[in-house]
Image (cartoon, rainbow, N blue to C red):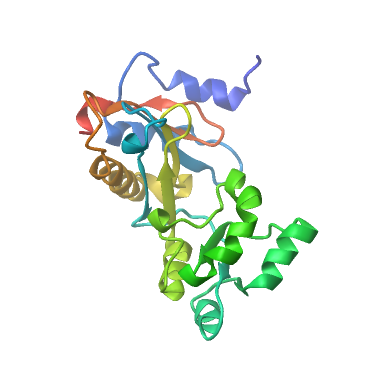
Length: 230
């Protein structure tokens, strides 16, 4: 597989055998983000748990101190005066059955986050097979099912991210944009890693963080010294 010149130049900056301290890795990832657009910086953590067991799930949400750098469109399922409260808080869309129909009949997906008030979950449940596979189904653990929809909207707009294990026990999350610079990315990195460590299941045995890699959208992966992360 032929690599582009920018990618090849970035690889030359790295020692592939080395585990970098987090601050070094973050500084390097900024140097290797050479694309013409503002690349997203992602964190990938493999955990020493088995996601097939309910008591070893790792899932939650956190508002990153410096946000994600991405503008998110928010759809809120709610009714009554909470519709206006959600819109006032910055929601792009808010309502009930009309949006269920729009998604079902028009295959409409002009949103990045779905929030629901608890009384709407019966309605939203009808969209489980559509929203679930896309990772958009509202969930109390992620704070996207909330009686205070206005607060949930503000958090989503401020850069709230959800972290959860995939089938291979890896968490993939954005920690910002290359333009943030090392300092802001480090703050976001520390906040996310801290949240994942705090969410360690009691059933998890042995080394909790098995590996940690950060990378920009178009750049190479940089290995972080996971033994220093806790």
